[in-house]
Image (cartoon, rainbow, N blue to C red; front, side, top):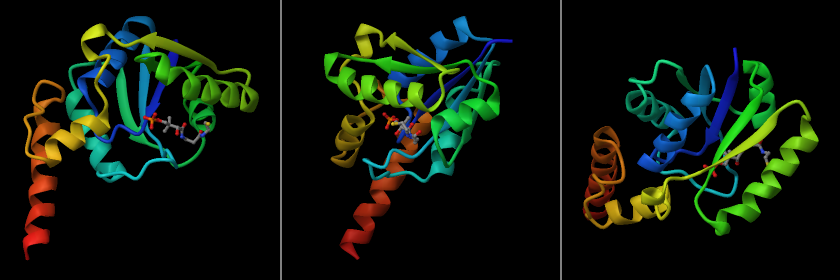
Length: 166
Ligand code: PNS
């Protein structure tokens, strides 16, 4: 059984992430999608909220299991018996960060390979932060995220606006 891990912040999951997760399922028998901490980012959604949205968005994919993990991605990969860490690459701008991360992970555990997949062209501009920016200003994000995520964003930002008013 070939097992892979798709790690990320997923704050929140977009169709760009789902494109990579879906294609990873064509290559691997089981794909663990893991919400991990990126210390460089401050999150809008809690890890549990992110896992819930991921689980809803991937429920049609039998090979996928979504969960959170507080620790190193290589530690998580080892725990789940994964042979690969799958990451999506959108553009050259992603490359420097991804190369650094893949090299660190390779140094930490030589048994786990990082596999890069090019994001489909239609999602090459898409990022969770752009989606949050548009949603926070009342824009329509339904072309970029599943409906459960669009609804969660509307709820989050309407609560934030109510808190600002009161
Ligand atoms: O979606 P992101 O923010 O690009 O994902 C980055 C993430 C969460 C995969 C990365 O920050 C990570 O692996 N965090 C866990 C801690 C870890 O293993 N760090 C070592 C890699 S440099």
